Amino acid sequence: MKAEKSSPRLSYTAPSTESPWSTYLTQIDRVTPYLGRLGRWVETLKHPKRALIVDIPIEMDDGSVRHFEGFRVQHNLSRGPGKGGLRFHPSVTLEETMALAAWMTIKTAAMDLPFGGAKGGVRVDPRTLSRHELEKLTRRYTSEIAIIIGPKRDIPAPDVNTNAQVMAWMMDTYSMHVGFTSTGVVTGKPVHLGGSLGRVKATGRGVYVTGREAAQRLGLELEGARVALQGFGNVGSAAAELFAVAGSKIVAVQDQWGTLITGKGVDVEDLLARHRAGHGIGGSPADDDAFWDVPCDILILAALESQLTAERAQRIKAKLVLEGANGPTLAAADDVLADRGILVVPDILCNAGGVTVSYFEWVQDFSNFFWKESEINARLDTLLVEALRKVWLYGERNSISLRTAAFVVACERILTARQERGLYP
Ligand code: NAD
Image (cartoon, rainbow, N blue to C red; front, side):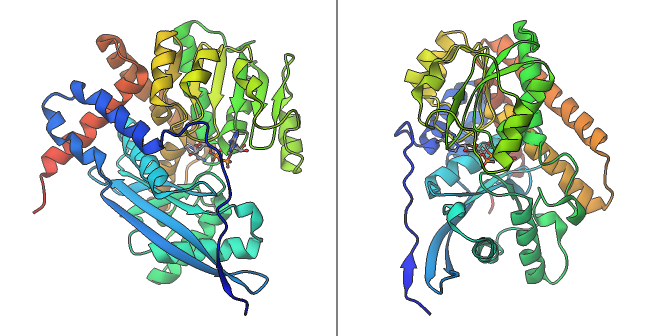
């Protein structure tokens, strides 16, 4: 066996030094004046309930041992078990995971799902691992966090660079720990292992549904609308497909590897096929700044957090911004967008399709009764439309942004639960 070594910290340059956690804290400060007497409990939202840091030693295929750092943060469990994805990415930190967990608390409450908020992450570039190494990493991570997860405690799901296969390994590992098959411990599993039809594309579908509703209120026709898209992964590609079906033109796509800008619009099916075959999206380099100047009607952010800085917000041409990613817009950029009259559908509604179908999956697992895909998509549409309608109304009545309105609606639910439960002991 070779000597132990630490995993290299792969470089990732964020466009801003503002951390996602400080973006989140600013959002909470902005909402506090609207919380009335519930404001008394707002501090609870500024502190994660529980955070676990785990060491994941893995024997690599070449016989060496590498150590990876992983996290599971449970931000708030006042309204139910923790819910939130698992991310494999070289830029994962505890602070980032805290912010992502907190946004899950707000998101599940904004959707009125019976969950709290949680998130997990491992600092790793999964493309540098073999399938066998990735499976070992997933299983050891699951084993380390098994003391705090479970179908009634905290239920992970896929996020950046994790998928149904990773969820199947997590489910199997947890089941080995408890001694029986526990399908409800994760969502986003393969369909024949208790997964839900419609889950894979649910987040992208939610981006489309909330975008459709917002566009309608703006008087913006989707037929012929020009869409610029950052991120062509699970969320971005599924959203792009639905916008293309609605007749929109995808005029720009940027991902980790390239930037494609084309006035005549891309053939989404063709791009997906090339992407699946490992050819990437092509075009100019990934950091091509021209992406932010592209003439478009709708900008979809479906990559990572902190992408839309105040400087970029000054330049974008869109009338509508859809936050498929979590926390893609910095607080200062929010102000610029508000000044420029650009409507933002905030992440906690825009990308809530994933957690909503995860909720459906969890319910189906408990009842062992599975629904048809058409039923799932219809229920998802209904819940998203209703959540957006309530938030829109609240925002209009109080002359505040959709983000602040969504936060108020969500925080009222969380803090009411906090108040009614009281403090233990
Ligand atoms: P993914 O790994 O499938 O795709 C991520 C995409 O972002 C890829 O196309 C990648 O190339 C691109 N990307 C990464 N870094 C980039 C950079 N610096 N510049 C431009 N593009 C970059 O992940 P996903 O599941 O599609 O998640 C995307 C976002 O949506 C994340 O913020 C995630 O938290 C959020 N989200 C995902 C889900 C879900 O169900 N998967 C649910 C809610 C929110």
